[in-house]
Image 1 (cartoon, rainbow, N blue to C red):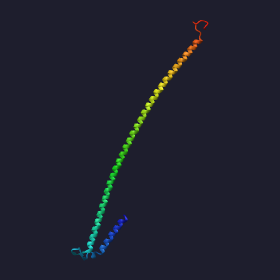
Image 2 (tube, rainbow, N blue to C red):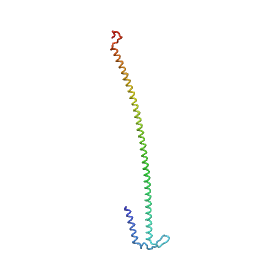
Image 3 (cartoon, rainbow, N blue to C red):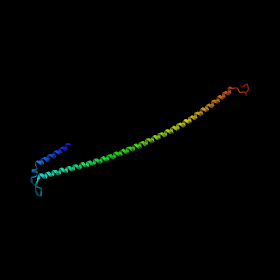
Image 4 (cartoon, rainbow, N blue to C red):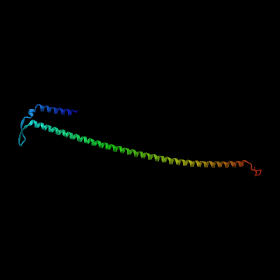
Length: 164
């Protein structure tokens, strides 16, 4: 228990012991003045009743405050849980959006790679064709030069002997 609770129990116990020890005095009639009228009544009993009323009122007020605090705490906990769920959903949607963005980027990159690869293959094919043509032309030129050299080096049967 807290020290305040122990102190409250101690004070209530002391008041109860004081009342039991002085019960005869509490019940003794006294002339009481209410301003307009006077009355013979036990002053101790009236004061004890007022003390019990004030203590009961304070306890009810404390219970009311604690119940309000408890309800506010529960309401705040529910709002916090709702906000936490909203934040989790928002985070999940951001992850989904990020995933879609990354997938779109990867798809676009793959398409660009494919296009670049096709362009490179077309260029390589063109270069290969050009190289073949060049090699073929070089081969033809070389064959023509070799044929011309053979014609010059070999004697012609139809040509006069002086030219041979």
